[in-house]
Amino acid sequence: MSLLCVGSVAYDVIELPGRPPVEVLGGSATWFCTAAGLLSRPQLVAVVGDDFSEDDVHFLRQRGVDTAGLARKPGTTFRWHGRYHDNLIGRDSLKTELGVFADFSPVIPPDWRSPDVLFLGNIKPDLQGLVLAQARDARFVGLDTIECWIDNFRADLVRLMPRVDLLFVNDDEVRQLSGEVNVLVAARRVLEMGARAIVVKRGEHGAILVSPEGMALLPAYPLDAIVDPTGAGDCFAGATLAYLDHVRDFGPAAIRRALAVGTVMGSFCVQGFGPRSLADVRLGDLRDRVRRYAEFVSLDGGRLLSDLEIG
Amino acid sequence: MSLLCVGSVAYDVIELPGRPPVEVLGGSATWFCTAAGLLSRPQLVAVVGDDFSEDDVHFLRQRGVDTAGLARKPGTTFRWHGRYHDNLIGRDSLKTELGVFADFSPVIPPDWRSPDVLFLGNIKPDLQGLVLAQARDARFVGLDTIECWIDNFRADLVRLMPRVDLLFVNDDEVRQLSGEVNVLVAARRVLEMGARAIVVKRGEHGAILVSPEGMALLPAYPLDAIVDPTGAGDCFAGATLAYLDHVRDFGPAAIRRALAVGTVMGSFCVQGFGPRSLADVRLGDLRDRVRRYAEFVSLDGGRLLSDLEIG
Image 1 (tube, rainbow over the protein chains, first blue to last red):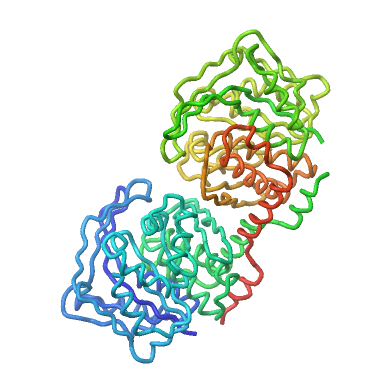
Image 2 (cartoon, chains in turn yellow, purple):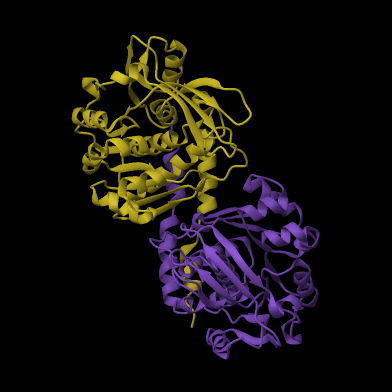
């Protein structure tokens, strides 16, 4: 098994409602790998500045992340400053300082170029393309993106779609990418661009998988409190792809199960602050919650259909 | 089997985005019974004015509704005029004319007073109490309400909770009734008021069942177009309770299956305009969509758990 992740490693300054700003380890690849490390041994390709703490490198390694692809360059690490609205759903980006990330040109170590699973985290589409060109033998490719890339580099992104096995987007992103308002119609339009499957993330409302083999509905795991939603999408992707890497099965049923694992991992993510809180989640915790999740969604379809044999 | 429904029968004037206003048969009890008529033989208690069309009575009877409890009084039938926002989610109530509904005092025909299932549709809580007093032997009681009753008659409503087996509320209503922001915490608070189970309806995002026996997650059936969401909640309740009446099983597993049938019926509702469009839905259509729904939510929990037995 091998799982390669390319994305951002950053320091975030997070302002939660009624709290002072706090700086914390962040970035799409950090969250992805922290989640994935529970089930697989993710290989991380990213760049940090000379201000990046050795403690944080150590944290990632302890979580099972191979950091041989983490480049350290002169300059500052990518910083994002965000302020959440009272509902913890909306948020404003107050500041983005790219630092060494501005010149990031991902180089995949030679012996990582044929991964079983490749995750192209949220970076510029041409850089995602650059990674794909280096790791062209990847068996399964997941890709995440955001509105700013869809807005400004749409053609670059669309060009990648035929290489994507599982596209991670939220409602707004799939609408924007497709030009369609209805999420289902939008996802089908993106399938026509060549992606093999689309998972539409809807935050507290769960996710929908749309693929030619059918749909899967993944309601969110219900929680009675949320601390910080930062990183939930990356944890969702991280656990999803780590499960697929772990079981070495990329068929429709495996993807459906993987997304359930991703859903549950996302629920742990939003209950804490920063990736270190997620590292407290053990395999037993994940299994317990997956068991409950399977109960929450279980439906005796056979019994239901026979009950509806009326008249 | 017997299913008694008390609620409103009305004429609605509906304005969909970019369309002229159209008058159509409506009311919570009308929608409930139209949906329920597919699986059961609902008994309807409601009041209409002398302007109510015989055609509409005939329509209900054809749908399998027993209209012996439909009183006709001098005056006009309840009218509601609503205008939907462009997203078909938000809506404004432009006018409400109670007509004969203002003096509605439900009288349950003597031989309908021990129903298997009783649905207290969205009417004033004291009237719901009046119905409960007459049908005190009902084996299973469902109750629906709206913000205006929670706002103005909270004590009357809370007093009914110990008699309620399944409370139908949306996110905002359960928050308002409980004073809690988190939906799960809110639902648990309402359980403490005495309701045996709460189903929280979240429109396009499905529903959550919260009960002492556990939770059930019911994602919405995905649709690629919506015509008119009016009546969806009542159809959801109608099919849910009609299924329970049909199978004569009020246990937790039956309620979960019932809610899946309700979810699917709600999806048919929003694809058409007015209750007559719902009447085109046959049992075979319902079964086909229930089969697909069961596929969309199916998750091999056993396989998932064994895959997560790592190390």
